[in-house]
Amino acid sequence: MNREHNLIPFYTNGITMAPMAGVTDSAFRRICIKLGATCLVTEMVTAAGLSRKSVKTKKMLRYHPDEQPIGVQLFGAKPEDFARASDLVTPLGFKFIDINAGCPVKRVLRSGSGSSLLGDIPRLLQIIKVTKENTDLPVTVKIRLGLTRDNPVPDNIGELVADAGACTIAVHGRFRLDFFSGDVNREGIRRIAEFSPIPVIANGDSTSVEAALKLRDETGSTGLLIGRGAWGNPWIFRGIAGGSPFPAPGELHSIIMEQLSMMMEMIPEPQVFHIFRGHLVQYFRGFHGAADLRRRAVGTESFAEVDIVAREADIAMHTSVEDR
Ligand SMILES: Cc1cc2nc3c(=O)[nH]c(=O)nc-3n(C[C@H](O)[C@H](O)[C@H](O)COP(=O)(O)O)c2cc1C
Image 1 (tube, helix red, strand yellow):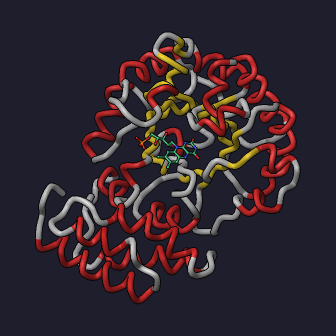
Image 2 (cartoon, helix red, strand yellow):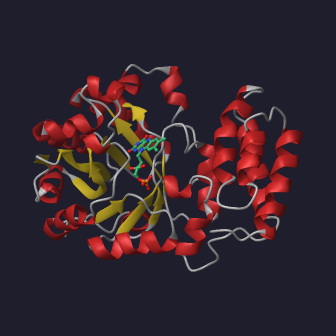
């Protein structure tokens, strides 16, 4: 094992909220850590933007003191951008720098970033190396299984990234072409973990406590990254930690209002409600009457309106136990 593997146990041996652009903003991250996530990661931040000292990009680095431990995720294509960006983020209190080599979105791929780095492993390794040279923080990397089934990453990818300076590798068990659908390939993650000298974090489809634990155990991974399974259901973190995976009566309402209040401190009206509706509809799933509440959620335009619909949802959820 790499001598650095114990530097970030809250990540390597923990249950981390996966970075999700447009979802895991500061408010939602605070909710996740409060409910038991052991670690957080920012949404992906462009290394080129930081390198240019873009004010808009730098705003994405803002986080609240309650959001610890937190790592910053960078995406980009050019090693020199990562060199400048890591220099810039190092003094900001992040616990590690994560390199995004998994994003399948076209816009990101066109620039040679995200999962396109899986088609150019030497460049990925160079990016890890220069990042490591420009920071004293641990460096981690998040990958997929490869571009396509015919073009998987090598089984010893863990060894390659470790030699370049990474101390942990997170693996989303899909190929780039899969985007976010199809079954997660646990065997693919397991093979990478088997050959890896550094800890492997498993990622993909942890939609319940059982699914999450199965993913970790069947892949031989040390930790988990949970994405969509926590969106609208941050109680999954508490469930994995041994507590209740369901909100107690009143808790759905209180968590929703807490998240909205935190967002309102950062985002002006009316935009904040437009953004928050995306979260609300995720919270309203899996209980009798949820579809109707989702329809109402997309029309909310004030704190008071969210309050009413969230209160009703809380009651509806606890008067029906349908598939929760
Ligand atoms: C809306 C959305 C945004 C995402 N943004 C990022 C991101 O910024 N960085 C990243 O590494 N992965 C991102 N991902 C991928 C997730 O981190 C995760 O790898 C993927 O959703 C699979 O995990 P899950 O099945 O638990 O959701 C995103 C996924 C979604 C659905």
